[in-house]
Length: 532
Image (cartoon, rainbow, N blue to C red):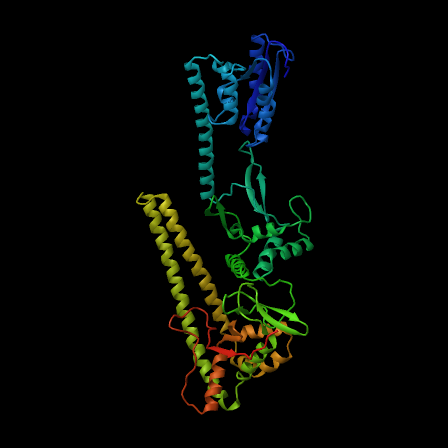
């Protein structure tokens, strides 16, 4: 803009929506025609500026820099010409409208709207100012209506299972050409070049691997991002393994919908990753740390945080990962000694072998019956929820409840069905676990002490995880539960040594039975004082 002469005139054409880009040439034509009518000469009296603000989104710095700041700096009166009022502003509270209005009130600016036959200057009558305000309000209403229509369209598409955003990694957006329509149909399909990396990411996370290690392993195996670069961040992995989209549920503005695209993983695998996430919140142990006998199976009896090993010279000690916890350090050798003493008690003498086998078969039959009854009960409840969902949908159609109430009820019922699915999977897997032969269990019981002494740290840890559970260390006292059926071996052997004929077997269920049988008798071993 020139700062000399009688006038400084700016002809401004602008669009703020992709669909309005085609309107720029028409705005230019009308603005130049108005300049010719006013006998303004391009380069001498006026300058034409065009804004395609769809390229800037919410960023209005370009308009401020090229128009408002230059008008404020001008020492002579100026004129800004917009084709219509809605090209001026669609927000009565916008900064640019306030700035231009202030320049008008100080006599430094006139605003012309030729298509609306409106001219605003310092001495404009109230009727003209009212027309301007009404025009701005109508423009704001039009803009908000477009936004509402977009939101309603999004809601409709989401309810139909259509994702309205960019496809997550492992999927890709495609355009399907059509002969009938003028434009292609957009769709989302599985990205065959990356889908196996996504599955592997979930599998590694389910095994307990941290996000950064998963990222490194996937990149080492050939993963590339959308730009073709071998790069994957820790945050990207975290976003992937916590995204429900991969098993069939999409989330938009905090609301969940089932989508129509083929799932990449099973819901059970996603849930397992969530369990790992919850467990690792209280764990400070490194994933690739050295194996120790009690790694990942021993917890603090005071704060329930992980008990981690550390080496001091030639001795290994166990300590709580919570720096504020007052649970004292304990030598690993004492814990191993306590476990060896327990494993000696598990072996079965020949004279009580027949009785043990008989009891095991009886327990096995009882457990099979328990599992079958539980499976039938779970499936029955699942079917009842399906009937409830159908009933609530009928009430929604009859307008007996609001859509918000219906969504809340459906979410609750769907969550319950998800829990029932997980429970049914546990019951099914647990039922298979019962097929372990009696001979195998007895052979393991008689060899467990030797296996523990001769095994390495990793083998010892896995063996203890099979035989005992709920291992906790509290003030140098080790507490644990002996898993079924090893708890029965211990008790029967002790009764035999004491000469008791009374059967006091410790069953696997309590007054509130759950679906998993490995709940045994709790024992506590007090360790000798041995600290650093």
